[in-house]
Each structure stands twice: as C-alpha cells, then as structure tokens.
Image (cartoon, rainbow, N blue to C red; front, side, top):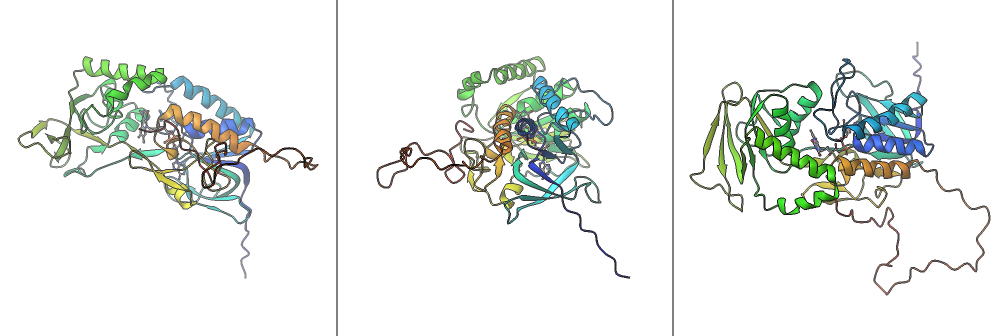
Length: 399
Ligand SMILES: Cc1cc2nc3c(=O)[nH]c(=O)nc-3n(C[C@H](O)[C@H](O)[C@H](O)COP(=O)(O)OP(=O)(O)OC[C@H]3O[C@@H](n4cnc5c(N)ncnc54)[C@H](O)[C@@H]3O)c2cc1C
C-alpha cells in the first residue's frame, strides 16, 4: 500500500526573532507594539541570553539577581515578553536552534528548527516569516595554550555562565587569563560565589583601555560596575597582573597549576619572568567576544571586520542589513554589551514590526518639488538617507 505523506504548511509570522537575550527580548516587545505577530526562537531553556542567564525556572528556583547587573531592566523586559506570550502575540520556542535559514523567492524567510539538546524533531520543524531579526549574540574568543584541554580549564564566560545558571562554582581556586574588562566580572563573580582567585592575568597593558574609561561616564551603570569590581579586587586581594599570559597549564587528570610569564609591548615573552602558580583547580580563558555570525553569513549579509578583528554585520541606523527584510541587533553588529544590545533590539524590532507603507491612492501633483540630492559629480549626496544599500557606519560601537 502506498503511504501518503502529509506535508504540513509551516506556520507563518510577521516577524521571527532568533535569540532571546537582551537584543531579542527588546526586539520582540517592540515588534509586538507595532501590531506584528512574532515568533522568538532561542536555543536556551529560558529567556535572558548570556548577560541575563539565570537559575532554572523549570526547577522552580527564583533568581534574586545577585550575580547580575541591570536585573531590574531584565525583569521589565521579561514582563513585557511574558505578556506577549500570554496574549498569543509572541510564539516562544525555547530549547530550539535555528540550524538553517534562507530567503524564499517570495522574499519571506524560511527557518529550519531542531531541538538544541538531544535528538528528535522540534515541535515546529520549520517556520516562515516576512521579516527576520537575528540577535544571536556572541561567544568567548579563545587562543590555544599547552594544557588547555585539561579538565578544569574553561572559557572565562563559561565559568560565569555556570555560576549564573547554577549558583555554584565549577572549582574553588582559579586563575583567570586573557584580555579585556570582562575578566573583572568573572573574577568578581567567583569570589562572590565563595571561591578564590589566585591571579587575573591581563595580556595587555592598561594603557590600552584605562585612558578611555572616562567614557563609561556616559553609561553611569557601567562606571558603577567598574567601581564594584575595583572594590571586590581590593577586598579579596585578587592579584591583577598586566602584560602577563599563561604559557602552560599543568596537571595530571585535571588542572593543578599554571605557568605564567610577562610579555613586552610586542607580545614577546620576557625572559626570566616565568612564574608557577600552584594549588588551583580552575582556569578561565577569555580573549574578548566575537559575534555568532553563522546565520547572517548563511543569508548573505554584507559584513565588515570590526576594530577588534571580529567579523560583524553591516547595518543602517535601524538595524537593516543588506538583505531586504533582514535586521541584525546586539553583538552581531559589533560587540558593545547588553545596554547597547537592548537599544538596538528595540530599534530593529520596531522597524521590523512596522507594516509596509500603503501605496498612495492618488498621484502626487507633478509640480511638487522633489527633495534635492544634487551633489558634485562623483561625490555622494550629503543628505542621502541610510538604506540597506547605503549602510550607515555604526557610531561609537567599538574602539
Ligand atoms: C558567556 C558570556 C558571558 C557574558 N557576560 C557578560 C557580562 O558579565 N557583562 C557584559 O557586559 N557582557 C557579557 N557578555 C557579553 C554579552 O553577550 C552581551 O553583553 C549581551 O548579552 C548581548 O546581548 P545579545 O542579545 O546580543 O546576545 P546574547 O545575550 O548572547 O543572546 C543571544 C541568544 O541567541 C541564542 N542563539 C544563538 N544562536 C542561535 C540559533 N542558531 N538558534 C537559536 N538561538 C540561538 C542564544 O541561545 C542566546 O540566548 C557575555 C557574553 C558571553 C558569551
């Protein structure tokens, strides 16, 4: 007997959003506010993304936000998101990964979905959307070092994620190494959770970013955050060693010690500066963040290399990429942190949720003057708006 296969038509929404981190949550509420039907797909079990990763709601644990910054912002965004889900405006698909995305000939987007853990098929294996907002965030950049495959060695962000999600540490005494201000909250989270930090090894000299620290004054919460870390370092006597790298991670079955050395301004090891730090059971390595670009690249967006060497998506002032109907928000447009991710998500979600302008029923009188975009031959018109084809440079995003 011939078996007839029933082909189900994939569900359609006005706006699909991939990622329920700061950018995705903000985008969802903004798109709903425009009257759009929205689907939010996220590989994590619960909303929050990396910055607001928290204790398991499924296990009934209430997170008091002790390991978080901007927790009240999250609660506000979350309340609005939950409202959208309850009213049916947002279809939330947690624990679901978008493994393939393409644009169809009718310009809609097709998203292929799979469970993010384990085998089987997703509740909705395929989805169609008129507009797509990608807010897939980023991950810790890593550089290999001998011994980095020993148990106990983790990404610095991985240690922080472990603490935020489980309220406990994956070890007791750590060395944190790499570069950038993110090493500070990781060390602070460790001591806050009851562990100790034998050293934070920063490969750069502070001459790189401390002179720009005053710019945090524009984001008072970040200045406050910096002050908190300084206080935690002093209180817990955490050694902060600049121009220092881990050259080797040592141990038999798991990490037991690290060898560090000083580096000069060109990154070369300074001879005679080797030092052994023993009695540790955890190492966190982090060399900054880099955006999760698989889906934007699959869809063919225009990209550029950012000042930190990361590949990022080119967008205009409202997050529109070079692919019509496709918006990018958060770390995908350049690593800039959660505050900026929320703002970008809100702007992109709002633009994506807007209905296309109706065609005017009557022709404009021909004598109406056209806006002047005249320019000297070979130069760009000075008043040209930012469009998908003429992207605006992202102001003040990274330095
Ligand atoms: C481990 C880690 C820890 C961090 N901690 C800090 C910190 O303490 N302070 C700070 O200022 N910044 C931190 N950051 C930087 C942080 O990522 C940003 O500041 C902020 O979270 C960016 O928001 P976002 O919405 O762009 O991305 P994210 O918060 O990263 O959210 C992206 C979401 O997209 C989902 N996703 C990705 N790909 C797919 C896919 N294919 N299908 C379905 N879902 C997908 C992910 O599950 C995730 O929930 C951290 C980053 C990482 C990686």
